[in-house]
Length: 483
Length: 93
Image (tube, rainbow over all chains, first blue to last red; front, side, top):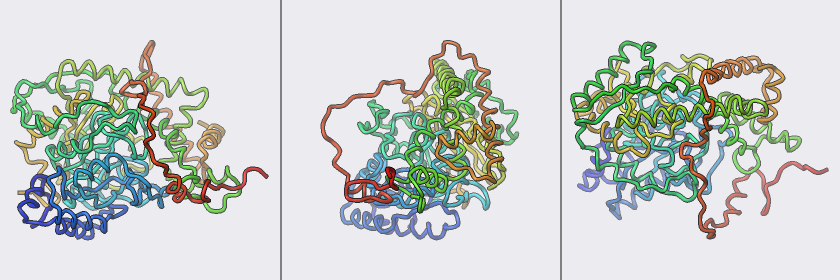
């Protein structure tokens, strides 16, 4: 018996039918991790604790939602007693004294956290090439990037090592790697999931979410990730629905917004064809396509590259070599301790963003850049507010193409920033959005993005699940089509 | 973006720029700033800035003691500490 490429429901059934034990599952996961070492998808493993928990579950079977389900955790979530690096040299030796609320929620639901996944340093990157711990390989092909920043999480799900992983998304960091690795990933509404214990990058944009093989599995995990948390002032105190409840609702008469301002002419014909074919599936399911306009959409990337660096320069000022993490050796004085620790500890992309942040926040430039970007951010949010008076969801491609080769974006940072062209606006507006596999070009997967209205993850999951009922793109794996 | 500006913002950021990387960094920052200058195309007259998508004021909670004292655990993970303080190089001569 194997859990490779199995869904959460299937694995739970296998456990309850005693076809496989919790310990056997954990052993299989660690065997697959070893066999896939070349992916470089994990930074730290949690083998001993995983076996201990599996043994406990074998002796004390439970019907918790995620009982015995192996989950890989992005190395951005603090895990008590387990090294948490955020992909950075500056946290190379950091062992948190507490766990993130997301981790506590998932583990109380019975999941087994098998390890911490590789990621772009401090979640700043779209190809997993900025990690201090090296590139992650996309399981779909040698030298292909998995996307980023949750590249390790996407790769381990795509390779069938675990059925699900946690990710975080500040400008597309769940959806873009989900698209490039052929899996399903959801960024919930800003505030749905507690940010307590998530190492902050851009606090008004960061949001955690599930990465899995299907919309149904994302729904199951999302329910366990969400909670109202007093320790996070932006955690929403809203009713948390049963996200599985509306999965099978008919799409008849439901409306999909198609963004007229989106310029698809810069995309390959193949990419546009895949996108249009998936829209046809939805119309066959009874949904209607409605033209909408988001006039300020083209400004979302420049808006993001003011706001995110500004918040990052502020958040990352806590890494000073005094309280935790690495400290440079033999500084002459306190000032040198700060400067050397940070200069040795951060990589080039992180430094670049801190510098941009310091610039746009500095006296004389604050109004021209930071305030201006926040005003445009409102225009973008207003565009969405007005679109959602007419439609239930909005659809776009998730990415401009399939996975690209490592190193192929060259040394121009803007080329990499444009990778998140379609995903960034949902973060700026705080809206939930998902990527799900909708095609394959040259045996490389591609994703469709579904953006939902505020707090309406249920509609996104409904559309995605109905699509996955009639298509099999989510069943494609690097090993071929799953039966 | 010139050398002087980059010196100022790297000081504000407490980052040292390697001499051999300086030209590339100035060039990158210049390009990024030129890229975000597109924002000037937007008419933002009378538009309130949006700093957070929730636009809610910070919540208050009952003033109960909730967190336990983690002093020992926190000092233990510091690069240098004694039983009461984080230690840094001498500041006052």
